[in-house]
Image (cartoon, rainbow, N blue to C red; front, top):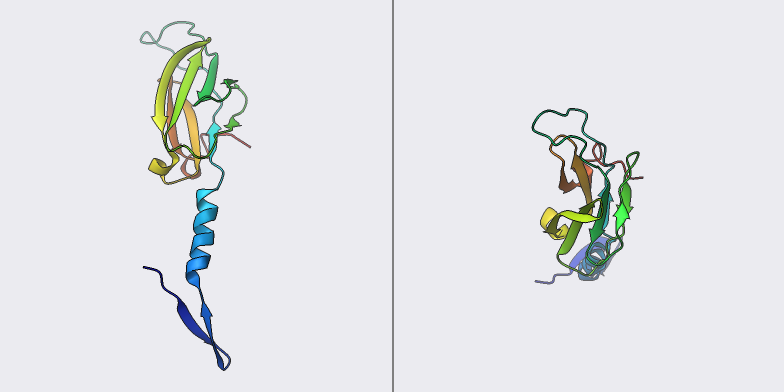
Amino acid sequence: MLTIFAYRVGSRNMKIPLVICSLLLFANICHADNKLCVSSAKESIKRDFFMPPNKPFDFAVQVDDGPIIKTKRESGFVYPVKNGKDKHLVKVYNEGKVESSFKFSFSQYGANELCMWFKPYYETWSLWKLKDSRHLCDCK
C-alpha cells in the first residue's frame, strides 16, 4: 500500500510523497554494483598424510561468461560481476582445469558485497558476506 505522510512546518502543512523517496532508495539498491572479492590463495601450511603431496595451487576464477582471472598469493582482487542476473555460476580452475563450480545469488546472502575465500587446510572455497569476512578477504 502506498501512503503519503503529512507533517507541519511552521504554519503550513507540507505533504511529502514518501513513495517517491522509497522508490528512489529502492532503485539505488537494485542498481548498486555487486562486488565479489576473491581472496588470496595461499598453500596450506599444515600438510599431513591425508593430503596429496605437492598439489599445485594455480587457481583461477570465472563468474558466468566473464574473464578467467588468476588468483594471487599476496592479495585478493575484486571480480567484475555483471548486474542483472539472479543466479551466477562460479568456476574455480586449478592448472587450467575446472576443479569445482557452484551457483549463487547476491539476494540469497542479502548483500551486494560477497567474499569468496580459500580454506587452505581443506583446500575449498567458501562464500560469505563481505562485511562478516573482511578478515578473510583482502581486497582493496
